[in-house]
Length: 132
Image 1 (tube, rainbow, N blue to C red):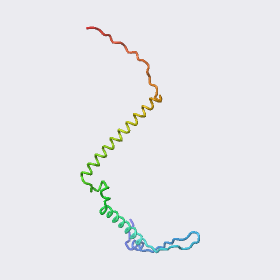
Image 2: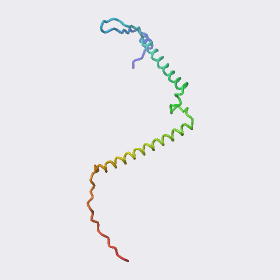
Image 3: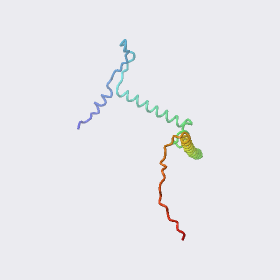
Image 4: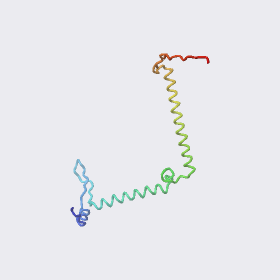
């Protein structure tokens, strides 16, 4: 197995690269940057940390925390009311769905678009009624 040399890794991180943005029509250099892998890593890490800090601060210092269900900042009364409203909404949805199905079936019957059912008479054997 090849041994990784710490000096060569550090040298690769510090190697300088040149990033040039050019105008495609005139081939004029618009912007140029001198970068290394280490500087790109530091910038990206810093942006990630700043975005994380900004997001946490937004949640902690604003009322947004009350709208996040997993954070747990809502009080028990609000949670109970939320559950009751959810149950009522679900039951109203079910009732509306059942009523719509009922009205659709009535409409089909009135239009005569229901399929014909087999209405042939079955001949069942008669039972003897004996007076005991």
